[in-house]
Image 1 (cartoon, rainbow over the protein chains, first blue to last red):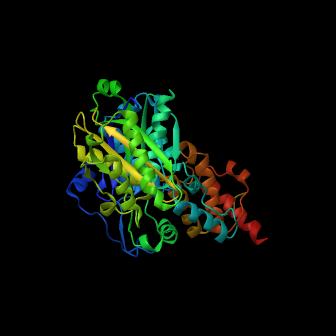
Image 2: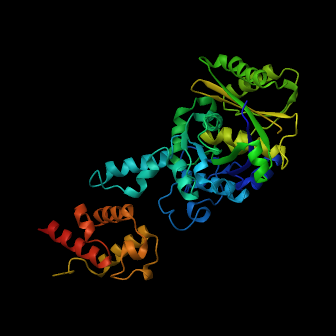
Image 3: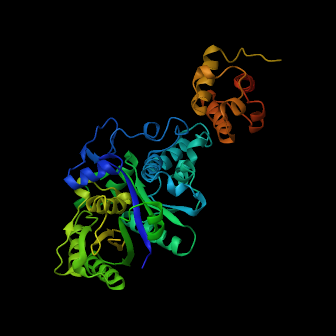
Length: 361
Length: 89
């Protein structure tokens, strides 16, 4: 069982920049998906959940942001919000602080724009070199650390919809291995025309209409004792994460049920203690199979379900991190109560399922 | 001997605009001789970027060895001027 607690969090979401607008939006169940202006957001979708009025220049700074792409700016802003909420404590020992950040493919917009310049320009090397760093996957994680002077291990994790859960699992392992004293962990995803077309072409007809969302969430993970010493509230204890593979979609239900059962069994949590469940709720059959799998594992328990996707759209790589943020938002300023547990689950179309189990600290 | 007859006032303004944009400074903060690195906090990435953007804007090839002379606006104008001359030849 992990000794780590979640002691601070931040979110940048279609509700706005910060944990507070996110918590208000989620607890009110307000839908943040709205019409997209085709002039600014061309592509196959006429609705989406974008972070309102967000830009690197306005939310990160005027200097050093000229070539910063959107997903990087969202990540830098989310990490900045988190550090601000705990008075910069985690960066007072910057070498001891790790950053584990999830992403889809980095910024597909940056990758495609840079490649097109090389093909379409007079010479293949007539590209903007300052934009090259945006074309690699670890740009957001690297830049977030550089910007905020975080000097511990810096990791980029990508795993589709399960990204946020995989990042959490990686963060716990990094800490368990003695590589850092604390971890900032989360994920970010941007809205772009390029991502929109990739999603549209990659989806089955049944889920093609689901609007896209964007945003990011970041969490501070540290040992309970360190949180107490620093005066950070222990909002929840990260008990464990579990992942499993499945072949056909018909196996999703059993695979996820096995994941959740295993998580409960190894941590000694009774199904009835699970009060909150935040599922991914991906389109098509998957959402129903996911909820059925969780239901199978929890039996007669009657938890409260927090469904983010109808409110935020499909936030892809940021989805499971935003679900975790939604659990903390629902738990409130004091976090999960002792004896209370919460589940965040996901089903990735490429054949994996996963869950994170949290409990009151 | 510096001749700048191939880079006219408009060309000069284009160059200055590109550099100020890259260095994220206001045009009035840059003089003909203020130095990018010492006075405007340019780093090696900024220098490469200036070279690359000017190549695109003026359709010329600039050898990276010229970076040694591209330390201020005056130096850049001279290098571009010579590159345009070489292109015309």
